[in-house]
Image (cartoon, rainbow over all chains, first blue to last red; front, side, top):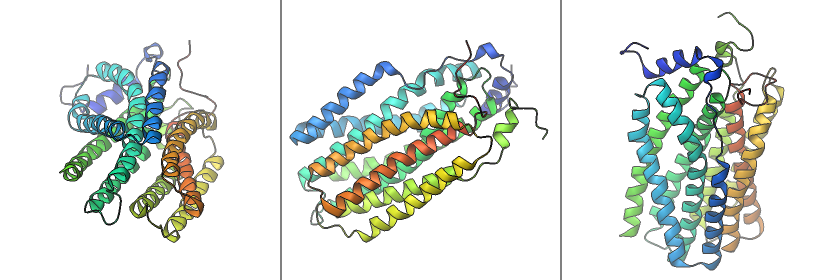
Length: 206
Length: 149
């Protein structure tokens, strides 16, 4: 057992480095059973865009946007700090079961939010330069772009790399600690940026 | 620190790798700036000089990153390809969906060409940085991190 005062990341690092080979968690990178559901959601999205149905576009944008925003806020401000204080086995088990689900949920939520949101803004005339809401739409695109650079360039690769590391017979604790630190830090940034999204979206809706 | 063989945990942490992730994320940022620029001008006429310049800049950064990956000695190229090919497939679906939205809304000609190329580069950049991040912590020769049965 590590010292009470030791950093959780250091604990993970030391613990996993000396883990016996048979302690490796059997981790799935992509939960294949979830792919049909993702496919069904994307088919629904394409139908909503093709039909240009206002309610369906609104539904996809609001529901997927809520999933994206709430998950980012929850991960950044609740789950991330909690995860950092869990014991090594608990953190390992949680990560092995939670992260693969995020691999499916987040890209699906993001593409639904963006595609339906663009079509909705076009439908409502918010993307026209003459619209009083045009500035807010552009501001939301800028926020999304910054979040996308952080999420796709840093957070998601760290997530995938942790899962691959955990599949090894001898997971390298220091690699996992470094990647998890990156994951928790960037999740906090995207969580904070989601507050800006909430401000922009509520401005657009009123 | 003394090198203790391919299983040495310090080895994968401290070995020098070229700035592939930085180049790819730079390219990704340029593509997103281009996307925002085009999105901010649609559905009107989009001045194409800026997105075209961003596309060329991003293409150079991505090509440099891929060139560097091929030249890294003792790199887990097998793991890189294993991750990249599935990620490319996933992100091509996402990019295709976004392209469909713009085509559905009447994007045509040079603007559509730049938009599709921007989305294509986006669909290459994300898998590249993802696969590189996984492969840089793997020992060369091991195709994936699966536990041996």
